[in-house]
Length: 192
Image (cartoon, rainbow, N blue to C red; front, side):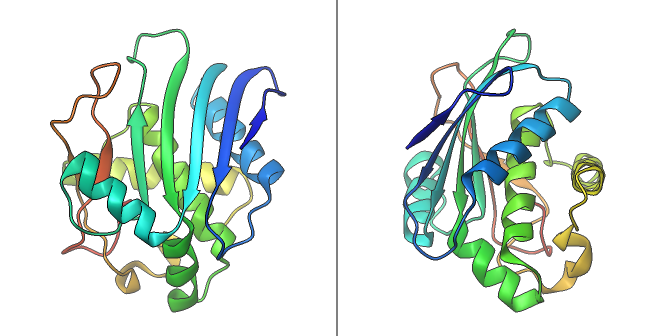
């Protein structure tokens, strides 16, 4: 694990246990900090785990009762009014690589989309309703564009495997009394 405390009061801890996709830790940490800055967060303590498909499937099953793989799971560990944003993201590098190959995009851009989506959940966005999902997708696109990154979601809406338009939350209580968010596998193209 790398702990990177540079860049002000935003602490990012990265764990990369997958072996499929090379991830530049400095680039990912910069992405996290830029997203949080865009959302007005100047103080945060985040953990991001890059995992393979089997690991995220097991986490999705054990924490949310969903017996399928997914792209990103967000675990909010702070309340919205807390002065420090705290949370964890579990991100499937396997799904990023597979989806990117299927739709013809750079897997780093697909992974960035997952990270942005998960961070937006930690920042209070949700996609349980069609209106909220559209708002969240819009914000993902704005953030990625501001960072000079393409939005793979816009490039291949209809070809995304295993994604639904709505998130499901679990009754499993996390330390701060918040619940993790993840995605159901069907029917709409993607909203993770």
